[in-house]
Image (tube, rainbow, N blue to C red; front, side, top):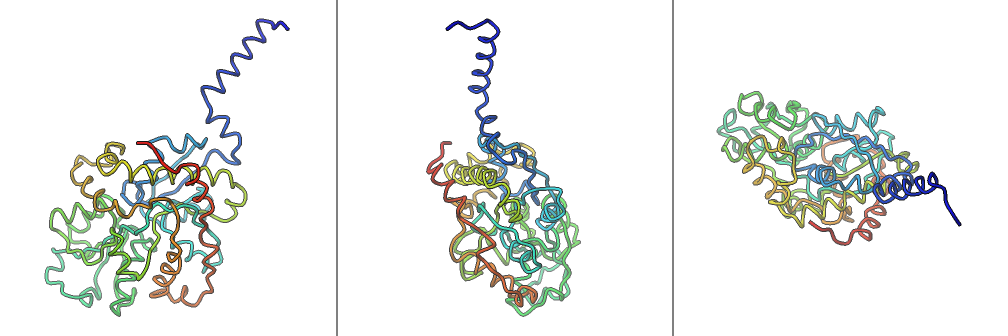
Length: 348
């Protein structure tokens, strides 16, 4: 059989396309290749896996074209998805419980952090004589954004000491330089935030740490069980319509989780954008070291995690306490389980 020159060129061109762009072929199998992820404070160690998946090309390897929009806090990123301007939230698992109490069904599909990685610190400038939680009544507590996970941690701490959230003032200060300035300039008395903000202030001896959920033992001691934190969660309708896309997202995130653990702090800091370090790589490295134990090893939600989160929210939120929450509808490990089968190990 003979071929014309034109036919040969067409065949060669097709073969070249297939060999040069396997992700393009993969993308054709996805229901939705272009996915918009909303996140609240992307530079924080809380969202490290999201950044690594982006920087190392793990999303592209799965045929995904990812757009990431950064907001001041988790509640703000959630609003973007609820409002329809983004598809997926990179944020705290417990929001799925809050949403269900309001009749909205969102589900977590992969875990980034098995600890909240949130720390509450008292300002040594405005509360130099702090002794007990009772000293916080009437004070200003800075959080990334009202209604965010940082607000949840602070509210839970207050409730354990008999203080209602209404007895303090919550002020949104973001997750970067604005949060640090709020403490240094005396605009707030307490800060509930994530790293590297917290490590920056600890290193400068400007705050007294009273709650620390960066390590597994401390987290379990505080909450009485595993407390799932950073995750990818999204409307159930999105999962139903785009199961292959959701699997691709999960694959990339599980791979990122494993990569972080294997690479260690030194490897992670080299992979981050220079802008994240803000000219202080030593501080960011310390922050990564403090949070390494909090990274999920496999993206799976622990069995006791959802009940622990529900108990924590119900401790101070009467709406949650009175609601009939079906925890099985707030998460699934099916996608993460398949991702682990695909990526039992990762290379660094």
